[in-house]
Amino acid sequence: MDQTRAIRFSTYHFMTDTMDMIRQGVDIPFHRREKPLRNAGSDAYQALRQGIAVREVSSSLENSNLKDRTGTPATGRIAVVTGATGGIGQALVRRMLGSGYRVVILSRQVQADMPGVTSIACDLTDMDSIRTAAETILTHAPQLDVIVHCAGIITPRAVGEMDTQEIADQIAVDLAAPIELTNTLLPAMRRGGHIVFVNSMAAVFPLAGSSVYTAAKFGLRGFARALEQELRPRRIQVSSIYPASVNTPMLRREMDAGGSIYNFIDQPQEPDVTAQRILECCERNSREIFSSVFDKLFTHACLASQGLLNLSLPVMKILGRMGYRTYKRRTSRM
Ligand SMILES: NC(=O)c1ccc[n+]([C@@H]2O[C@H](COP(=O)([O-])OP(=O)(O)OC[C@H]3O[C@@H](n4cnc5c(N)ncnc54)[C@H](OP(=O)(O)O)[C@@H]3O)[C@@H](O)[C@H]2O)c1
Image (cartoon, rainbow, N blue to C red; front, top):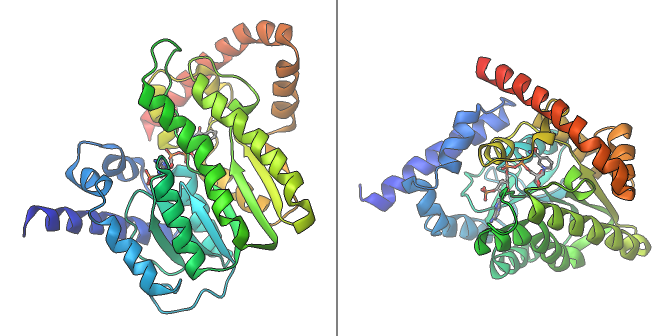
């Protein structure tokens, strides 16, 4: 077997196993989620990034006419989901499939076909890639019911020490991509459809050390609020969800890179809980959803009053440090 084939083969088996686990409702252990996805040095990951196997998935959609591999046409509601290979996204896809959705996944990674899921290669830092993916979707699914913008990245770094590419990537994935994808897919949204933005508390509570992420998420909130007004006459709902911290690879990467201790004032939510809330969003009217009423009121009060923010930060730091120690103890036992 030559090297490229060997890479495809091992990647295929990893994704098939993963998708089987999703289908069976099994939570994928973190080492299974992260290693091949995070280890940018691995051959398979590099091959995927270079688009070797990705082309096969695109062409399989071309041929599938949005039928899944069992040949069943897409009669259920159709949802487009970004970030579907991540901690929250995987749990969301599992729940959507359970609720009868057909899910179109946009990802840099190849996904083995599974019933109800169509995977399209897309790098959200690349606007051409987004437009190509959107065209493929529109060709085969002229009417969409739901779009969930779940992809996101955070690279904690103090201003003055930031890498230009890291700035551009965060703005692209966290802000520009959801805007462009919404822009290109909107003509296909049906009346009564729903667009959901997976935002963050950072959209209301500025995170020192993650200012670019904060800026992108603030911007995303503004976009969603303006869009909600634009789409009212078409009866398309627009919601944003603002989780605090969620126990996913993103959170661990963030903390490894010196992320904010405020993530641990409360213990991180499990991804399935966040996924359930996103799914509930899809079924209701436009809303902004926070983890709790307290979170919503307190963060907005801090936003309105610099004095309150300054008073609160030292207390929050103490609570965050205590929470982080608890989290580390809990996760080291797992
Ligand atoms: N975890 C938290 O504590 C937390 C808290 C508040 C809000 N959120 C928000 O929740 C959302 C999901 O986060 P998560 O914790 O599930 O993160 P995650 O596990 O790290 O997953 C991130 C997802 O984003 C996708 N992605 C990243 N860069 C991409 C690119 N260039 N092109 C295409 N896809 C890309 C990844 O897909 P591929 O690598 O497969 O391409 C992956 O599916 C994000 O918007 C995040 O801001 C998370």
